[in-house]
Structures are given as structure tokens and as C-alpha cells.
Amino acid sequence: MTASSWDFQGIDPGAEPPDIDTTIAHNARVWNYWLGGKDHFAADRQAGDRVLAMHPGIVQVARADRAFLGRTVRFLAGEAGIRQFLDIGTGLPTAENTHEVAQSIAPECRVVYVDNDPIVLAHARALLTSALPGTTSYVDADAHEPEAILQAAARVLDFDQPVAIMMLGILNFVLDTGEARAIVNRLLDAVPSGSYLAVSHPTLELGGEANEEAMRFWNEHAKPPIRARSGQEISLFLSGLELVEPGLVSCSQWRPEAGDPGSQVPHYGAVGRKG
Ligand SMILES: C[S@@+](CC[C@H](N)C(=O)[O-])C[C@H]1O[C@@H](n2cnc3c(N)ncnc32)[C@H](O)[C@@H]1O
Image (cartoon, rainbow, N blue to C red):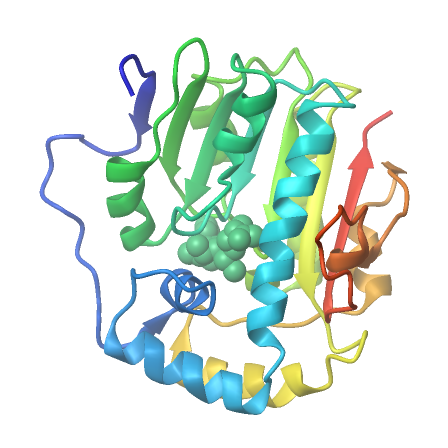
């Protein structure tokens, strides 16, 4: 990395590292554990292993979700010509992060990441970079507050040009479906036609019955609380959008590429275009 464009919002870059509670499992770290990363603590591994015992497919789900992210961003930056991304619920940096995939196709892509977990903030500072002419920015904000997200993102993204709103594995942390719809609608209202929404979400469908017990355990022992939704409920987030083929499917079956396992996982994925 010789030249980089890197912008933090909502935090002081010279500030002390954020307070990280290592005594209770947090989703970003457990997700990183299931993905084979290194950024987790004993409490995360214990909770991750308990969930794995109840729902042995969870590692496959996490991998399928990341592969879906890669294919989605390749589609958006490639075929759809999108140059701006708002990635809400970023997770810890791993392979094929949104800005890496997008900028490998179009180096000028501008990417704003949003997460509210202090460990994601700490690692974003160290790891997320972007070669000029692209820009990568990180916003420390809560998905429940779309107004604050839009305001911060507007420092980097031009909301008169199309934006891809990435909401992968995040709406499941907005427990009230009406509120989740209102958040999605507020974000979509802020972007012009030709913009996209990408969503992935766990479900009890598609062979996901085991999610029920695993999520009950999670909600008693870890943070933040999570829920599953049916395909019908998830399709509400996409209403009014033109669904990109093949529509709302198991995320592993959304335009699988050579080498993708393609076997069904209980995690929906879809991409919709604002007309
Ligand atoms: C399951 S991970 C998904 C990460 C990434 N989007 C992916 O698909 O691999 C969910 C992420 O959402 C973040 N998250 C959970 N609740 C949030 C909230 N209310 N506001 C912002 N981020 C949140 C967690 O910290 C975590 O990093």
C-alpha cells in the first residue's frame, strides 16, 4: 500500500482503543471464529462451539454468506456498473472484503463500512485500506439509526449517483420486522434509481430448523440478540425493487461460480434494483 485514501468518521483517530468486553460472546468475533479467523476470545469460542453443536451447518452458512458477498459485489461493480457501496454490518476484516472485491474491478469505487462493534472498529483502523483513486471509509454507528448512517456516509458517497446498500447478516439483529422495514426504506429513499439493495438473512426454512435452538441459546448467552425470518418476511425488505435473477434463494445458490459448493444453506440471499 503506497497511496491510500482512508477516512474515519464518528471517532477520533488518535483516541485510545475502544473498550472491548471479552467476557461475553459477540457476533462479529464468533462469526470470525466460524470463518477460521484469529480475532476472537475464549467466550466467543465457547459460545461458537455450543452453537456449532446445536447447528452443525453454521460454519457452512458463514462461508456461503461470505462467498455470496463476493459474488454480489462482483456483479454490482461489474455487470451493474456500481461505483459506491454502503456496507452495513461489516464484520471483522477477512478475505474478499467489499472494498477489495469492488476495487479489483473498478479501482475508483468508494466504500463506506458501518458496524457498531468496538472490535470491528479497532480492526478496521488497522486493516481496511484502499488504493487511490478509491476511497474506503468506516462509520461507527448502529444499524437502528439510518439517519446517522446516511449523514456520515454522505461525506464520502454522492447520493445523487447509484449506491449499493449491502445488508448481509445484519437485519437479523433488528428484531422488529416493522422497524427493519422502516430502516431499509429510509436507506432506499436516500439513493437514486439504479441503486441496489443486497440482503442476506438466516431462516428456519431451507433446512434451518436447528437455528431455532441455536438462536435461543445465543440470545441467553451472547450479544446482540438475533432472530430468523421466513422467506416471505425477508421478501418484504425487497418489495418495490426489481429482483436480480435468481431472486430470493439460499445465498449459496445465488449465481454460484465455478468451485462454489452450491449446496443449500439456511440463509437467504437476494439482490434488488431500485427502478
Ligand atoms: C453476521 S456478521 C456479518 C458480517 C458481514 N456482513 C458478512 O456478511 O460476512 C454481522 C455484523 O453486524 C454487526 N452488527 C450487529 N448489530 C449491529 C447494529 N445494530 N449496528 C451495526 N452493526 C451491527 C456485528 O457487529 C457484525 O459485525
